[in-house]
Length: 296
Image 1: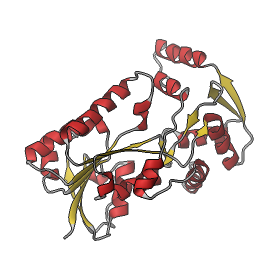
Image 2: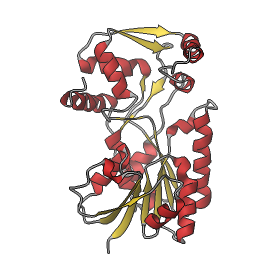
Image 3: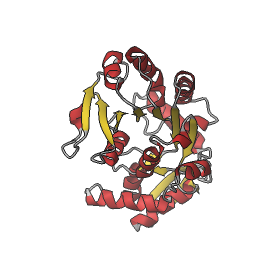
Image 4: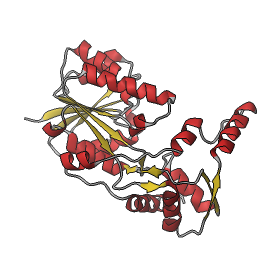
């Protein structure tokens, strides 16, 4: 008997890719939940129905959407967990599994506002749900319009000089979006990951300097990296705000750049039998996509 699987945020970058992977497999009946289902094309899907909600706090409609779901995947922020709990309580329904997507950013040593929200969301998961799986990816890249690596690619493609905060020795381990999707797919209905916190990332950690230079090499561009003291960047952010302008980066981003963001993925690889791609490979794929779409 087929199970019913609900995807919250089905029109998002991650949710849509997960739905595409599951489409037409005849393994699940899919429920897509979004504020604007018409944002994406689902013409090629044979096994999906939609529920429109005003927002994640639209408990009434969210409750109706989830009341028959055997498995739920929340591709939105983990701090939405409490709203999902309220919706399930209203529906008087207990799913077999609910998969939450958190963030490895929770491990930052800085007390940034997003950390407290993520921690509160995770505590809601642990406290309110019986059969949960929490997946924490590092920085996700691979979408041509994202605000991290694709943005960097566009900059490196145009500028002969690349400013870098500090010396660029801190480690980073970004994960390609298709690898995040694969980890999610392999977690579905998987007894090995019930009530498990799973950290995922790219295959290996690299330094920020290596990341920048890898992008330049893949673009076949000769670029000069110019280290800039972080104090100057932070002062510049304050100046932008003083003159009423939005700074190009936030203080939180500067602080996070100066700490290691690598994680141990050995448990994820073992439990889910999947090894994600190396940054060089993933970045190469992203650059190819951006060229095909005329972005660079």
